[in-house]
Length: 486
Image (cartoon, rainbow, N blue to C red; front, top):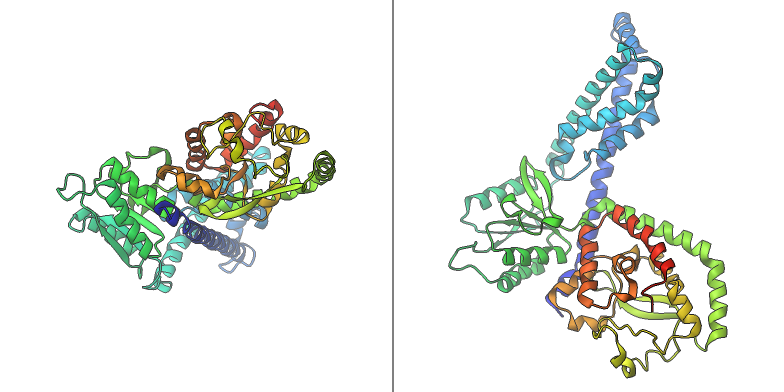
């Protein structure tokens, strides 16, 4: 089995771990922030309504904080949305960034006082807003610091927990400093050192040898993070990064190596030190949850709305030719997982049996991309179903059960893996989709396998919910044009 495929088959577990940590972090921080707000609101009520510090203090507070100004549910929602919008629930030092907390709190205050400002533009309203912002910002910032201190004191990762694989030269002072910094923020974790000679060293390894060394380290450790610190040639650096990404783990590097693979870099902070994250967006846990939620909702709506059409197509297929209504076939999806894809049957029942007899008609000339214009195996009804992509609709079931996504790379045959080069395995980095960049940019008229791989890699490396929505919007016009489908 190719090394890249072995690593990618571990990727789902690594991705799940990162996603669950992101979810736990989000839930913990939201709970903390709402708790701080409730305590702050309760303190104002005690001082203002119960007059625990006397009437004078209560009257002063009542003039600045009248009843109803800190609305419970409305303000809570505005606070969470504001902090989320400015990244205060992010990784590393983002949750402790006072500027992000201040901006998120300011947005919450502005949203809560918006209606009041329209009818009362006095200085009292502005003063109220500034005082609420100062109190809220201070309380949340202190709460975050106290939370981190408590977590660091109480919860420690066990010594046999998930380690970090650290690629660097043990004799390099900067590498040692980065190592000590990260271990200081992750007490109890151990590090697997990969002592890789840097660029210019007489013992510098070739890319293939460096890849083997790092692969061996990742294979023997249940690592969730790969850290790169050193000056390496672009070829060596790219090989190491690709190994980490194929494994589904986080890949961090110090900024001095940030000039490579710019399209997927992101700056993160740990302990006040900057690291370049080179991991593809698929590891951003909250986005994975959102994408899966959209897939479930979209597939349920699609299956429900299209069920009358399914019945009509099923009857038409049975009347048009002999054979089953549905066609199923094993395909390879995310991380090399084999699953069974469903389509409406558009070919003769013996289509697979005579495929080799028609291999000379393959328009792409590449067995990994088998496309025949005017394929004689396709039935009269099948040609109509393919032109309008109706044959793909049963794949909504694949989306619902989690084998596929609404948007992603196209699934392919397991038999093709033996002919894959190293960079072709990048297609395994996301769940296959009913539609994707390949479909909206040409459908079957794209007959160059390398172009298909390039489009799939472009989707995976640029992935975001906005990109998914853009592709979905372009899918309908591409289908209605009816070009490139055969």
